[in-house]
Image 1: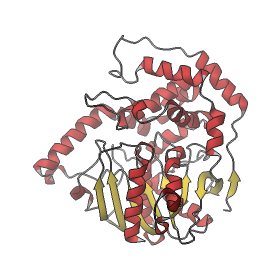
Image 2 (image 1 turned 135 degrees about the vertical axis):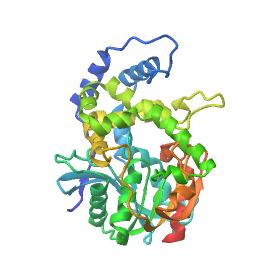
Image 3 (image 1 turned 90 degrees about the vertical axis):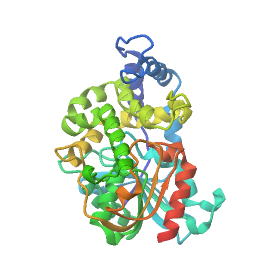
Length: 381
């Protein structure tokens, strides 16, 4: 379980094939002026795919990603890819940052510098972290599992081994989306290895009969949102490979499947409620995220995590109350429960609501997330 150095070096034939497929995309008929009403705005995506085909340069972004030291560690049959940056501060706190779907390790790259070297960013040396950013198994440059059972709990066990391979027997953990599920599983299954856990998203079980009127309003609104937006969850937890075949074959289809979520989940609406992802991200940032899925052919294996982790219903099992010190920073997205609904399940030491930023805070509002990680782990380390 010795970490092997790794550099991204996508074969040119993969990039040539990508351009060929974009050149030959067959676009669906759409209703003029319908925008995002039926899902992805086809005209918006056509414009982005044209930029992807003619102007986006993967090699530029590949080189930028390779500025970070990267490794692969073989754990339980999976080659786990990660960024590992040690702080110049010798007493820094080890911290694992776990992404979700449809995201990748790339999401966390904006916060690595401020976390590992706070002094260089105007901060306090005592807030330094040694940072590990893994790619979930079957995501990005981590190899896809070839057997069943790679759910959030199994990933959590792999993270314990991953951190130990770098000499970190105890560490801190942060995550949102699947990173939240993995961090919860770490807290439930490996509390002795944790300094503290921090979340950018939580979805605790809800006892409808016990809700206050105010909580009931929140819950009813969330159910309306899920009814409108969770079609992907039902498909990915039941028939992931049905979608994977087409998404693996079509870069435009892949971009549609991924970026419709970035449009909806990002805090990118103006005062009139009109959403525009370019308020938060550049075209290159969005295409780098999609390209990581494309060049690694991992959209199918990424979808399988839903099948492995969800119950037969539409919820993930919640373990008994986790005693590890817990911090929460909930950003501006519908799935942000009130603190009192989270406290029965976690040992909450800090709970903060941040209105600027959505589902991908490490990219949308990195300064706020860095500040919260520093503030919380300063309390518990």
